[in-house]
Length: 158
Image (cartoon, rainbow, N blue to C red; front, side, top):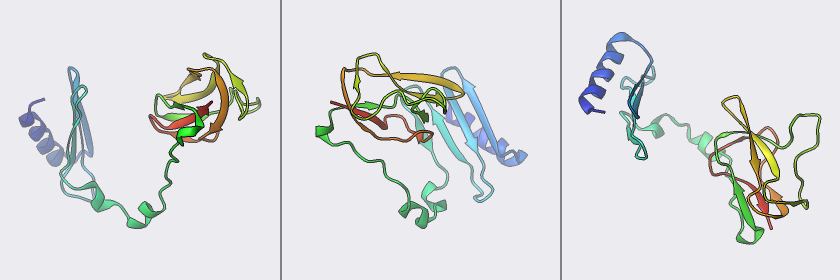
């Protein structure tokens, strides 16, 4: 997307008082958000396989240092824990098909390649996550109902 178009969108956003605008042009898209705390909008330009961020103000300026100190850290899996199954998407982790039923797997349980390990809800769609190896579940890194990130470790299988 042409930078002149992005600048024009920023000007329109500032003049109109709209807080956010998103424009898609082919495979490219731009999303501009005007936060009331800062006078300059933040712009994010996305190009296929090469996202480009053009911030007008530093994101760190608005972050409370006390919040950063209490931020939970994702535990890194140890090399001896076996094969790590990672989340293929962002969503909510569910260990069972419904709240009234037992979980798909437990620590110490043997699983075969293709067995369902959990469900990840993403955009109101329930996605079954299957084991890609045969082995014994040695660790579960997340708890039921917990939000998860892309690439976050879910299970260790030995």
